Amino acid sequence: MAQQTLRPALLERLPSRVVGLLREIGALGDERGCHVYVVGGVVRDLLLGHVTLDLDLAVEGDGIAFARAVADRYRTGLAVFERFATARLVFPDGLKMDIATTRREFYAEPALLPTVQPAAIEEDLYRRDFTINAIAMQLNPGQFGRLLDVYGGQRDLRARRICVLHAGSFQDDPTRIFRAIRFEQRFKFRLEPGTLRLLTQAASTNLIQQLSGPRLQNEILVLFAERDPARAIARLAKLKLLRFLHGRLRYTMDVKRVVLAVPKAFAWWGSRSPDAVIDRPLVYLMALLSESSPAVIAAISKRLACSREQATKLSAGGKRLDRILKKLTAKGTLRPSQVYRLLVDLPDEALVLLVATQVSCQQAAQLSQLKRYLMAYEKNRAIATVLKGRDLQAMGLKPGPQYGAILGKLLDARIDGAVASEAEERAFVQKRIGALGDC
Ligand code: CTP
Image (cartoon, rainbow, N blue to C red; front, side):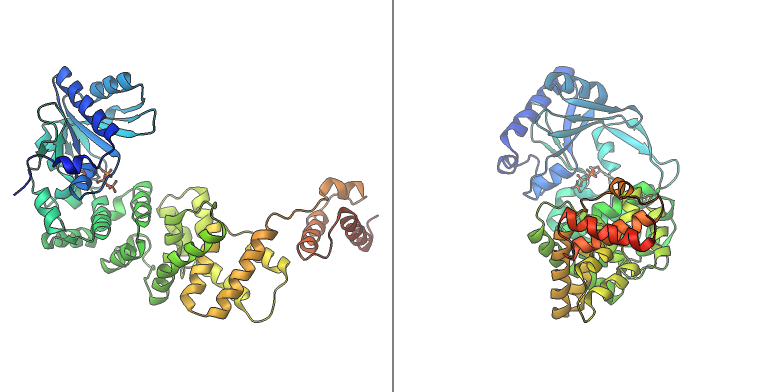
């Protein structure tokens, strides 16, 4: 039997200041004569015994006017999106809250954003993705904690299944295909058979192709930001969804091994450079593309409307990285400057991926060699020559491409320890200028 009211024990999992705030906002609802609810993920998570503080509020009435009243009272930051009848508030302590007018949505065309029209809470819940995300909890005094669960959300939470509310759900919004996988994997739920059928049907059309680059990118990266993206990637492959990134993308055993090795690579990297900021979801995407050619990677960057930074990082991976890895794990010893030259253009994400790729090969000796090189590289990364271009000019070198060549060789010599002081640098440069016969 569905609960009518959220159990106090569950509510108490929220920080007390948040519960206090929700009660006050409910009272504001009474003052302004409107019903106010929290909806979506927070309610779902509370019922599962988890706490999330991404608060989504729905107001039966003018949601934007209500959001302005809340913003005034609590002196929050406020961004209003008139077209979608939503507003985002950021409280002084950083708490974020979205407030929306309860609405029905019309999808003029599948895969595009909908137009909205005010409607009662029941209809607002009906337009949502899955039953487990379509439960509302009222905030008005006297009704505080009352659950509105019209579509069997609690039943499906108990049965641990993901279930759409109507047959057109994936058509309306194909991002829900990825969301279904996200919730299925996160909570270890199942897709209800009818929902799975609808999802497979939707995935067999070109609906996802119609999604804009930023929307598809967001879904992919949000999915890869989950705790265990390897499972989600395997699911994408099984449901034949990788083709929406690129027709030639395959989830081979080798790629799978690299994806599965990413957590170990992160653990090693984190233990060496705890402060490094790594784009974790992007590393998973790079792992998925570890056997892809530069052309395929470029096409995927374009499809996902990647930023220049993301695209540069992605392009450092793929088959190109394999060639670098081969050199780093070959027999024999590389000079520190050779290692530096191999790695210097790579973003940290690609360095993590190098480790993951080598972990996936299960060759212990090569893995330790790679780690040794990476540790040495970490130290050498910061080395710079004392002499700069202007010093070379003062030493009589005419402007030209030889500047870069000589400074490059000087840096190599510094890294290899062949020169260790400014005087030695000067002697090194002088010798090269002399050899050019340029003085
Ligand atoms: N929603 C939807 N269809 C979408 C996106 C969102 O119906 N394509 C609804 C769902 O009710 C969802 C709510 O909007 O619960 C909030 O969306 P979002 O914050 O993206 O989802 P959460 O459920 O909070 O997921 P997460 O826990 O990953 O933040």
